[in-house]
Amino acid sequence: MNNLFSKLVLTSLLGVGVVSNVNADTLVGVIKGANCHFHSNKCVAENTDPHLRLEREFILVTDSGYYFLPNLPREVKISALNNTVKINGNVMTHQVDVSEVFIKHNNMFNSVWNEEEIFYDDYSS
Image (cartoon, rainbow, N blue to C red; front, side):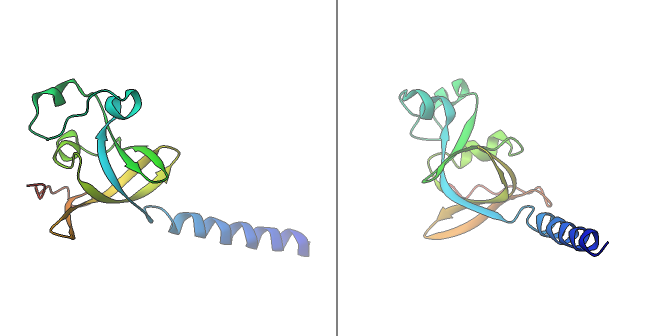
């Protein structure tokens, strides 16, 4: 009986830890076109290039790998293209459920998108 109680307490404590880690991860990297990254095609250099329409998806490329950003609007990804960004969210295997995006501008990270407030400011230029 005591062993069962210990297991229940341990399980509940582990469960609390998992819940408290949601959206606690931070990644820093660069937004790139997925096709460019995976196939080494000529990459678009600026977010005003008309070839961006051909790029189906954009990813965050970090020192540790790449991550798809499925809940981040396309216009935010395009605005952040080739810029250093900091992304807060729940990191899964090659995917991030993004809660907030910061673009580095003048050596400072400026918040440009927040899932809770759903605002968007273009700090890329």
